[in-house]
Image (cartoon, rainbow, N blue to C red; front, side, top):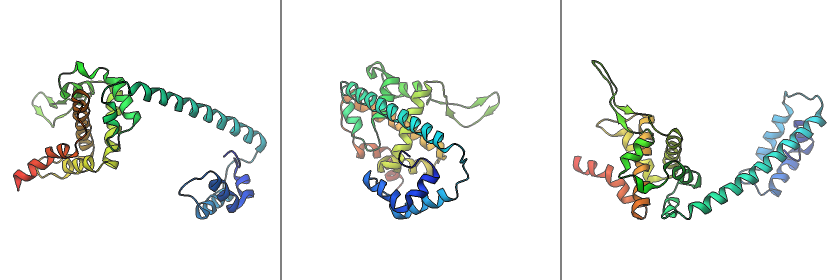
Length: 230
């Protein structure tokens, strides 16, 4: 965008020029094939071609603003990471594959002092993930989560669950177990919420007891019912 902000600029560079920019920037997953695709897209662009020089100036300013905000974000993340390191056992959370700085900082920011909670269920209630009956008069429906809690904490846990399902083998197996078990299988969203609740229990145990993340203990909850059935 800095070298060739407009489609006409990209066409002038050609596939070789575009690819050379990527090579100089040491980008992965790009090459001549993608460069040619970009050139083709530029040739078929239907964008406005009026006042191109003004458009280039505006794009340079926007890119400059983005660099400033990126720098500020990096500085903020370094500061947050430094503060998190002062909290006991946070480093053990960061060792879990699929859990990063954003998840841990968001969790700590919403929960505060973990010692003020007696058990994980209180955290689950704080997040709005407490299970309640969906009853109305004579109607007796399926159970659901309450949603009466901190929305941002619920969002952090949901995003963490999605990340772990995609990157962590143990949590992905737990997710699949909830989806496919013979007794009371869950829907996709329900399974994600179940994983989020599992994350609450794991975080609570690590932060209060200082134990290491143990994949075998994590899998025990779903393996024991399978063994009993066998």
